[in-house]
Image 1 (spheres, rainbow, N blue to C red):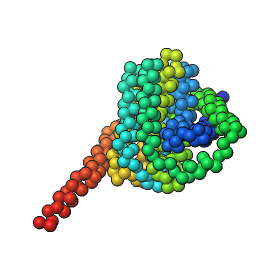
Image 2: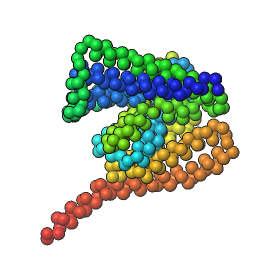
Image 3: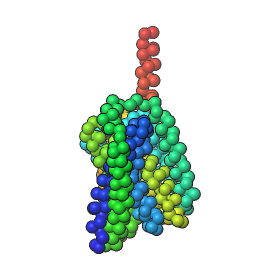
Image 4: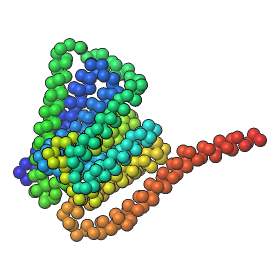
Length: 370
């Protein structure tokens, strides 16, 4: 297995580096007078997706496009099916109206944009510049709209408790430096271990990127969402995942495309299967979220089961297992059509309950006095 053992220490360094970076950068920004909401939209969002950014940029620069693209596409699928699913199993998740109106359509739009830009089999540097420009505009818009948000008393107390002197600033800069160093070294070890594991197991780098690397780099989102769910802060779990998916495509793929000397090649298998799966699970969020503005426990369990089914397909397809044909037929002609019908019916019932039923009740209430 040679360097495959580097996967675990690489993951630990990525998680630790992201935590150090978020803690140092958020406190430094707070001391400099940056609004806490803006910190959450930028620094914290960057921190939870920093492992994906470090791995994909380094992979793209080194000419390993399958890991770079597979990491992002796989992470987005992991975020929705596995992370949201596990968080909802722990406790039903609340979904804000703002999230359904703005962030979810944005997540769906970025997934479709990735598919459109990479349809020719490549993400060029120009495509990367377009993604980064949209991400920058999105951050600016979010920062401007967030300035009206109230500041929590706990945030003010935490910032106020930090002494404002040169030693404090030096410690925070050191924490940021250690965080960045952990991300760089951790991504280096993870990539080396993933490539070695792919060769030893006889599977492609794309499959490793879509599974091991994707799950590993999504661990910060997993920890954040599950802990938030356990603490009762269930709206944070959904916002963290949706924001991370937007960040992954616009920022991670954008900067990765800019870092690659000749852009990033997108494998035909990604365009044929994995990218459509990413788009499909993004679209599935709308009816699920809209149905009562929450993700129920059974819906979370369903998400997790679909992630298991997706992972099983990847490994069966990679090894060309004898059961692949039967498994594909069952998913294509039975499971997926039933799921699509169920989602459409869920959306129709939710729409009827949200908009049509209240109108009928109001008319009866008007007519009753007569």
